[in-house]
Image 1 (cartoon, rainbow, N blue to C red):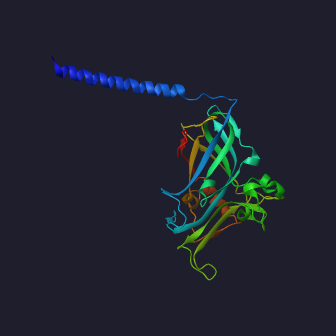
Image 2 (cartoon, rainbow, N blue to C red):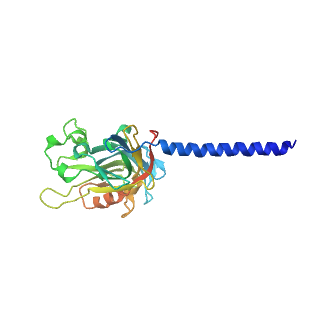
Length: 283
């Protein structure tokens, strides 16, 4: 008996069977993928993960911007609103405006996970949103600005509103930098970037409302009644200091209601990038 031949034959057959099973498994997975039922809805999550270059953003940690200045972030928060999900077939789901305002805070992990309910089943591969608060909501009666837009004494939006300027702060970042010369009024080298401005009530003023569209490329968030996909976006705060304009903390330690804020908002709108999507409920 040729035992060598028989052993080789057995190994070959075992390999062939394993390969066939793997193909069958793949085909089975494809076959069991839940079909789209347009009469059903599900929930889509969008996660905003703040980073600084290649590192996860940590409050109090030191980073270096494009101008070579070291700095620490003590506070970071921004409004995300007017979300639109676009599916592979071109149809769009516009989140009802009253339910489309979110305040993302670096200090509060829960706020970084935005839940969008009642999304028609479909495969969504593009998301559009506003960084800030639109002019219509800025000018609505205070009673119609609830949730994260509440500017009352205990309101969630109180610290993101200029009462003296009647408007929301869209993007707020504060911290310290050794590049900022210490003065009697600013001994610790603090910087304050409070970016807002919706275009004005009666006449044109600063308008820092920015719309961002992020493509998922060949990926798709599979919204189903029993599947909650999670779209993971990274937000690189270093981009606020580079891009169309290289921003120096030494030259501009305070940027609020002035024309230079347009440069900062043009920069940070490019900070929002797609990273990955999970359709299995994992992070």
